[in-house]
Length: 282
Image (cartoon, rainbow, N blue to C red; front, side):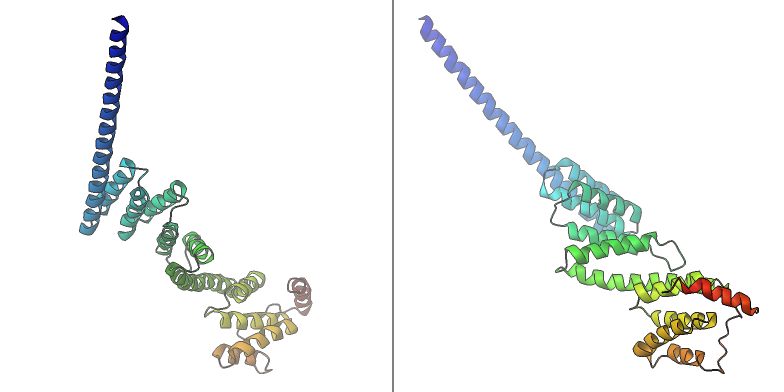
């Protein structure tokens, strides 16, 4: 009798454990379905708020979506949508924060190229002009160059190339702005270096012709005739029909008056200057 009772007890216990396991599985499935519904609802609400133009509430809802179900494929997309919501209304600082967080949290996600592109746009949109701080310009250029290098076959790479061309124009304008500043104050070394930077780094921009002419003009005035001829030849070869080349041609005409102030009235000082500069441009 005892052994039968023991057997019955074990069997009952087994049924109880089995029924508990089934209940747990059912509860787990119900919770999972409920979480997915919450995630789906939060994402939908975020999208609707974005459509209405309430980007702050939209970003909040997208963040909720990501937190509710972090293992879901929608979590990474929600992080991007939160950043995009901020971007649409020029909350660039918040958008950048979300995008940089995404790159840390989802380093291998398929949408990384879009994140780099949007990050580049956030910096790009903050560019003012060549007289302001270069941080946004350089950060933007870094993102677009990364896209061209790592994702060359994407449509983002094509637009990134156009953006870099425009950025280079601004960077060249910055160099020209500073070069002219030094030129006006007869600071020849920094002026020469800035004009040379334009010729070397930004030779596809609209500023190359003027930079070459200024290099001719300054070198000629310093007595560095061969150096001046070198830049004049480059200008003539590439831009022979331009007004800057015509101005350069006049530099070598004995009747030409270049308009630059006399470097030194004293001949000995001028010779000393020439000796100082010659070593810099070999």
